[in-house]
Length: 220
Image 1 (spheres, rainbow, N blue to C red):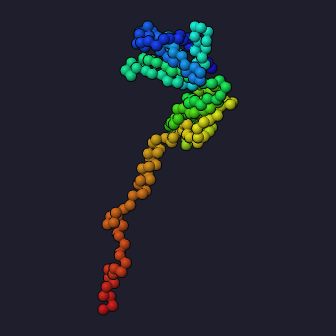
Image 2: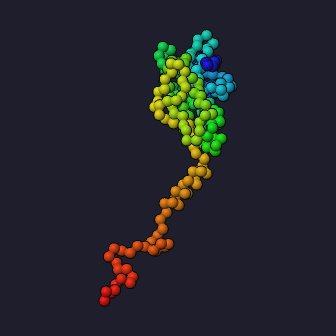
Image 3: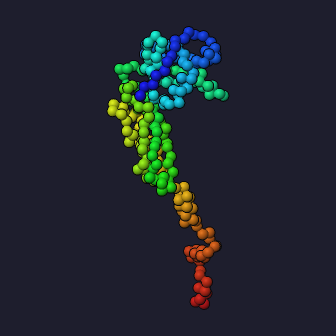
């Protein structure tokens, strides 16, 4: 899905004055493209509330020009989280792109119902494919995942034409055994492994060559 965002060309000027007017400075770049833009803050904030890092965004200018982009970088104010600047990247339309795509897990795992703990190890995964085929999210259904089972990157369902660009053996999400069961097992293993110190409990065996009580002088 492609989202739309209205943009205006801007001249190099004081970005603070631009922000005070309710707009956010931005730039779009890519092969043969480099434009300074400004965006309406409220429209930008509404868009950010529903997109992911890999969402396609069409920047529409008043002149009728369009740029088909992805967000490359967002700068925020360190104290207020105000959006200070946005970088958009327009990749070449005739070549595949490599991108980080967020992973979204859903459904209640079978192992969780049994007391297991669901742990997501990877939040994103790198994929490569045509710009129009890159997904916003990669969905992972946990419904059939039992205790001790995991989903690996090689098992992710990707759109046609999109390839995994990382190792297929990485763990995405796993269901751990119930914590209380683990703690009891560890305690039992520790108890079994304890040794009884010499001199306590059963008597220590006599050293080799040491005469047993009653044997010395028996032949005299």
